Length: 299
Image (cartoon, rainbow, N blue to C red; front, side, top):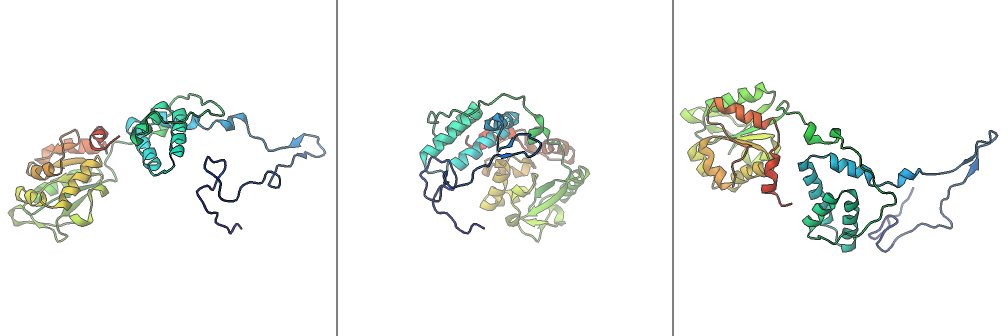
């Protein structure tokens, strides 16, 4: 029934920061009472922790070493993001010291991302961490199934896009157990090649590419030129590239891709005809293009 809200930075102990709120009272606080086990004479009841309780690093070391390279990069980025908000330099130095104990590559990666190379505090663990064999079960990337089943693919269309292309793409995507969503500049849809209407599931402004597992950019040449002058459309394509999505595209989309600074790689696949869909599907089943990440994100 604690009703107080202690003020200040420190709400735990021990801490290297000065205490400003209530602290423990060694003389009058809670202590363990060692009682007898009764008539059986089995000894005293005490509150003890095993020696291995002092090992605070082995499990973290096992986890980090079990990750794939992109997952390790994301862990480094996550620590750098959080520690980048910490104002007290000594806290950052202490945390870098703990990360060095867990894994030297982890500590060095975070220190580099923070611009604090060589500033880690030396931490002496109460119990030295042990080396355990990596566990494949801990890595989400390594055990992720290569499939499109249950996923969602977006196709970006404009006036003049080929309705037959969209229908063929839908058939291929649905055969894999995924769903195709048509994204157009306006929710009312577009007038495709030959004057045939293409209905839209989403307006471009209301359906960012990050919501989809893979995307296909299929405008007409004139439509691509129009979209290349619109920040929302350029961002739609750029975000897909930056979030490591597989991007299929028709040749007419080149102006838009160039404006979004999309570089060719294994995840940028031209799908000019229905027969070329197989390469796009094979790439999309891998979900993310991890090899692209170092080119689009700072370490």
